[in-house]
Amino acid sequence: MTGRVIDGVRLAATIREDVAARAAALAKKGIKPGLAVILVGQDPASQVYVRNKVAACEKAGLHSVLEQYPADMTQDALLSRIETLNVDPHIHGILVQLPLPKHIDSHRVIETIAAQKDVDGFHISNAGLLMTGTPLFRPCTPYGVMKMLESEQVVLRGAVAVIVGASNIVGKPMAMLLQAAGATVTICNSKTRDLAWHTRHADIVVVATGKPGMVTGDMIKPGAIVIDVGINRSADGKLCGDVDYASVKEVAGAITPVPGGVGPMTIAMLLVNTLEAAERAQLPSTSR
Ligand code: GUN
Image 1 (cartoon, helix red, strand yellow):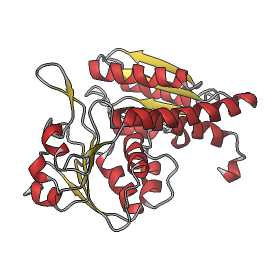
Image 2: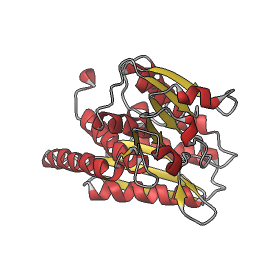
Image 3: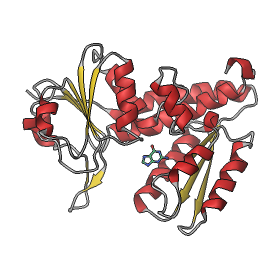
Image 4: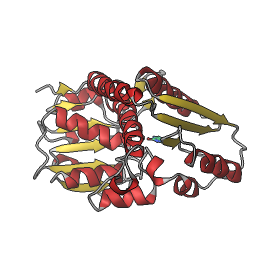
C-alpha cells in the first residue's frame, strides 16, 4: 500500500483565493484587513517564516507590516510597541514570531496582545475559548491540519487520534480541535513510554516534535492518516519533517509531505484569521 499525498500547496491556494475574494468585498466598504508581524532577533528560520507571512498577505490583498527589531530589544520596548498596535485601527491582527530571545518573557508578550487581535490564538483567553468549545481564533497550524483532514473527508467522530508533541502552538490546540470534532485524543510527549504502542493504535497521527524522522513506518497502523508538522533541515541542507516519509508512505492511507504539506496551510489560516478579525471589527461590539 502507498499512501495518498495530501497536497497542502493546492489546498492553501484555494483558501487564499477565498480570502482574497472576501478581502475584495471588504475593500468595497473601505476596509483593508491589516496584520502586524513582529520579529525580534536574527533567527534565520524565523526570518523566512515572517517574510512568507507578509508576502502572502500582500498577495491576498491584505495590508501587512513587518517590524524587525534587534535581539537586544528590551521587553518593555516590545510591550509598549504591542500596546500601540492594539489601538491602531488599521491593524486587525498582531503576530509576534516565536521563539523570542531568552530575556523576554513570551507569556507576558502574548498576554499583552489584545485578544481580539491575537490571530495566532495563543492568548490565554483564546486558549480558554478554544478549550471550552467557542473559539474566537484557532491557532493557525492546527486549524490548517483540520482543513486538510476535512478536505480528505477523514471521519473524525469516533476516530483514535495520537498527537506526538505537546506544545502550546501545535500539540495542545490540535488536541482541542480533534476532540471537539469527536475524536478520542492522546497527546504523547518526549517522555511517553512505548510511543510506538500509541501511534500503532491511531487512525490519525499528528507529529510535531522538531525531531527529524522520529516516526517511522513500523509505528503506523496500515491505512492511518499521518500529518507531519515538522520542518527541519537535514545534514545535506534539504527540508524534512518529523516523519520518516519513505517508510511511512508505504503504510499510511494518506500523508502530508514536507515541504508542501502543513507549512503552506499555516500561512493560509493566518490570512483567514486576519480577515475574520477585520470582519469582526466592523460589527457592533454586542455581536462580536
Ligand atoms: N513560531 C513557530 N510557529 C509559530 C506560529 O504559528 N506563530 C508564531 N507567532 N510563532 C511561531
